[in-house]
Image (tube, rainbow, N blue to C red):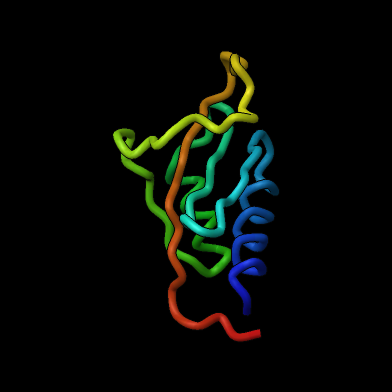
Length: 93
């Protein structure tokens, strides 16, 4: 399975959660996620694990720069989060 297919699989699994908008950076293996406040990091990591990968919350101090296409203001009911995901074994395909 190619890296592009893996990142699309993770992104698709996250975006199936109601109230989540996720994008995955293939080179850094970081998913940037906007989610309702009632959706926990554990919920997001569980979705990534259901896709066949491991995920953990990205430390807050690791923010390189804001995305140039990110909106200036977020809805108060949404929270931006980032998680790092890693491949667990060979997925085949």
